[in-house]
Length: 452
Image (tube, rainbow, N blue to C red; front, side, top):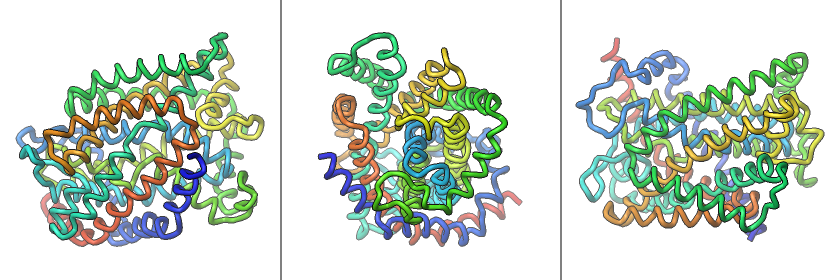
C-alpha cells in the first residue's frame, strides 16, 4: 500500500500538473497586472470589516471566511510539511515554497472571486460557493463532469489524515515517551477517541459553529507560534543571516538534494518538492479555500478574492518561513534523523531544553484541531453537491472513521495519499479558473470604478 500511494503521488505530481498550477498561476498574475500586490492595503481594510453589510447574501463575515480557510491551511503542513521539505531538499526547498505562495496569492484571488461570482444553490436552496458551483454556473451544465471530479476527490483530499497522524506522533514523541509511557495500539486508540469526540462536538454545529471557533483559534495560534520562533531566532541571532541567505543560494544548487539518489543533482526534483509542499501547505489552486470564501456575506466578488489572497501570504510567507528558520538556525536538520513534526520539536528543544517541546505541542494541538473542523465542512459541501444536502451528514461518519485509521497508519503513506488527491482536485479547479479568468478581470474593472 505504501509503494502504491508513493507511485500514485509521483504520477499525479508530474510536469503537466506543475505547469498547470505554477504556469497557470503566473498567467493569472500577469493577466491581472500583479493585482494581488497592488491591493494588499485594500484587502486588509475589507478583512477588518470596513465594508461589511449584514444584509449581504451569504452566511459568514469576510474575517470568519478567511479564518475558516486558514484554519485548514495553517495546520501540520506548516510544521511537519516544512520539516519534510528541508530534511529532503535542504534550505533551498523553502525558496520554492515561497514561489508557490507568491503565485498562489494570485490563484486564490481568482478562485475565490469566482466562488462568489458564480454561486449556486444546493438542493435545500441555500446559496453555496466553490469550484463545483463555479464550474457548473460559470461554464455551463456540459462541464458538470469536471465539477463531479472535483467533488469526488475533494471528499478524499479533505480527510484529516496527515494532521491526525502527525498530532499522534507529536503526542507520542513529545509527551508520552519522554515521561515513560509505553506507546502502541492502546495509546493510539485513546488519542483517536479524544479527537473523534472533540471534533464531533464542533462539526455537528455546521459552518457557523466551525467559523466561530476558527476565528478565535487562528489569530491566537499564529501569534503564539510567531513569539516562540522569535525566541529561537533571537537565541541564534548570529547564524540567522547565514541561513536566510542559504535559502536563496541552495534553491539553485540541486546537488544539496538529499533523499533518493536517483533524484540527487536534479534541479527539477528540488523545485517539484518545494512546490508540492507549498501546495500542501497553502492549498492555492487546489480548490478548498473557495468553498469557505464562497459562503462569505458579500455581494462584491472581488472583495472576497482580495481577502482570500492574504491566505498564502499568512500561511506560507509567514508561518512556514518561521518553521524553516527555526529548523535551520538550530542545526537540527543536519544533526538528527528526525522527520516531520519530530524535527520541528527537536528545533524547539535545542533552544528551550525543558519547556520548548511542550510549547510546540500546544501549537501543534491548536493547528491540528482547527484543521479538523474546517476540513469536515469542505467534505460535507462536496457530498451535498453530489447526492443532495439532506444526505451530506453521511460524510461526517466517513470523516470520523478516517481519524481512527490515520492514527494507525505510517506518515509517508498518508502524506502521499493527500498529495496525490490534491493534484487531482487541482485539475478541475485550475482548468475552470483559467477559462473563466477574463470574466474576473471584467468584474475587477467594475469594482475598481466603484471604489475610486
